[in-house]
Image 1 (cartoon, one colour):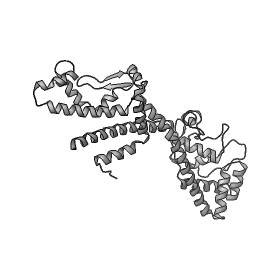
Image 2 (image 1 turned 30 degrees about the horizontal axis):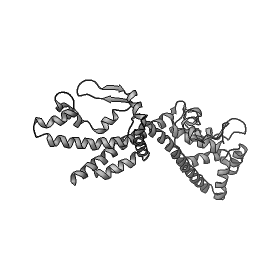
Image 3 (image 1 turned 180 degrees about the vertical axis):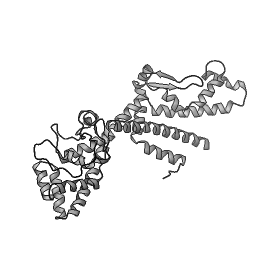
Image 4 (image 1 turned 90 degrees about the vertical axis):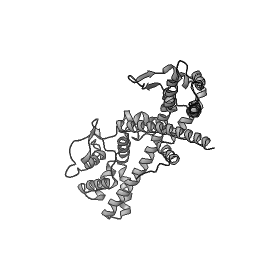
Amino acid sequence: MAAVLSVYVDLALGLVVAFLLLSLLVSGLNEAAVRVLSIRSKFLWAYLRDTMDGAGPKGSWLPAKVLDVFRAMPFARDPRPVHIDRPAPASAGELPETGTGASMINLLYERVREIDHAKRGRTSIAEIPPARFAVAVMELTAENGDVEGFLARLRQMNSPLYGHLKGVWEAAQGDLDRFRRGVETWFDGEMQRLSMLYRRYVKWVVAALGVAVTLLFSMDGLEYAKTLLRDNAYRASVTAVAGTGQGAYDELRQLCTGGDPVPCVTETLSQPALVKLMGQALVSISIPAEGEPDVRWNGAAWWERVSAPSHWPGFLLTYVALLFGAPFWWDVLRRITGIRSRR
């Protein structure tokens, strides 16, 4: 009974480790794309442009469709202000008159660019603390008269920010400190809403990456489970016959064609099932005992696996497993192995 239980524990560990590694790869690819393309910064400034200056000539700056997340947001439209390598001015500039071509975005950027650095000529700021946004609004208010004058100028500019701040000002009942706290609370709520929108779109990106990783490695979860069980049985048979003399290797010679089966058995025992399966990826790397690593292109064999309907259920199992994410599989691994998390 203990031996049977050990086999199933080994099977569970093998599957969890495989899904954990592939999920980490998906997460790593997603994070790399986000950093290279400055997606977080673009989401922030797209929201700020919609909120403070209104929609552009092509509509809302935020992506309206999933396709825009892959096309418009990364490449077509960059909502970020141009980076200025100077500290914030000593005093905020006055709000521009309607039609001058200036924008509230540029005035806000003047107040928050102290720790900015350029990224392909644009700002790299991806987060503005609500307290700092509220202070920036108060600075702009002070340089343009009182709050009523500030709101009147926003209305003249047709800025959508007018409606938001007008409601906050009325709720503050003329108290500047309450107005500042109200702006901070409102902006914090908007950032939470933007985070929810961002996570919703990121799920689609992760889903697309999950399909790519599953097919690239042609990771058939069902085949992998069978390989784990077969390897366990194979190792058990080797252990059983290892001490009974050379005649016990006759069965192994049938599996390992050639002369002495010992090198073949040694290689089989030292090669995990996951490594065997990864060797069927579109591009595989093998590291021999001696010599340089070998990089192979497995285009023909890979396409034969991907196009075979018998592998599709296993691909689907792997894809669904990757959607759970690396944190889920790490937690499962901790529970199975008893590893304690350390804070």
